[in-house]
Length: 106
Image 1 (tube, rainbow, N blue to C red):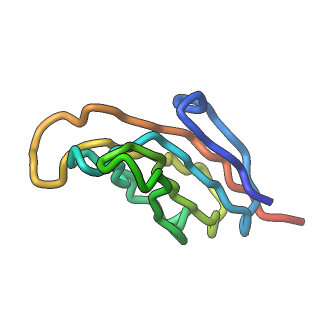
Image 2 (image 1 turned 180 degrees about the horizontal axis):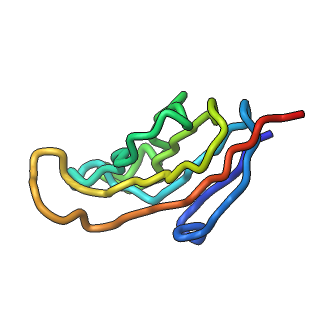
């Protein structure tokens, strides 16, 4: 089973079973340099896929960053993503955070 997450889910709490996946879809325009980056450092979720889906034209058009995580360990996990330019320090322009309660399947 896959849990679908998007901008409207920011600040919420979700439940998942070990082995389930969470697919996060957030708007992004890589040509601006701003990309979603993982800010959480938690072993409870493992990144299994990172891709960009967008139109081929017009050139520079925005799209959606898709990050897929797998729940690998029971416990409370904070999934936090920041939208920023990797070469700039300072505050990100956007933040996405969801708390996930991961449980073992019985």
